[in-house]
Image (cartoon, rainbow, N blue to C red; front, top):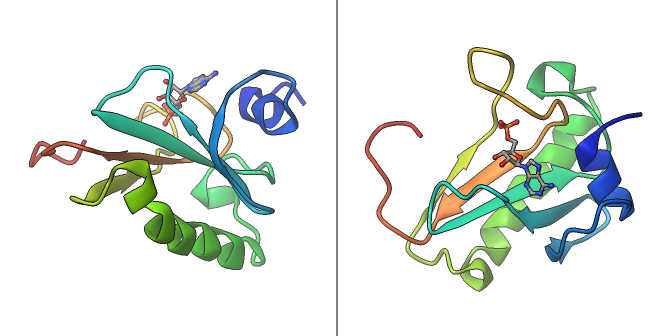
Length: 112
Ligand code: AMP
């Protein structure tokens, strides 16, 4: 499958991981839109939230919980924003579900 995030997960495209477990990796976004901008990427490929299988509910739940647990170590003790884009209107550019983790500074009161 020609998916850039699958290639990063497999190590075929080098990208330092700031966190990894059996479920997902966290990398730094190459085009940061906040002081700290990470991507939480499940190791399992599915395009977006509309393609989640029933068992993925638990996977994504574990990822959200773990993000909360590691947030301080990522420099996000002041708070953070989680965003997951789906489709053209949301400007999703990589069709492998991922969660943007943004923070390290005061965010805009707009959504993104
Ligand atoms: P989205 O537009 O929601 O699909 O988000 C995709 C994100 O992936 C964008 O913020 C890109 O900057 C980021 N991105 C694309 N390629 C890479 C890469 N090789 N390493 C890190 N981030 C990437």
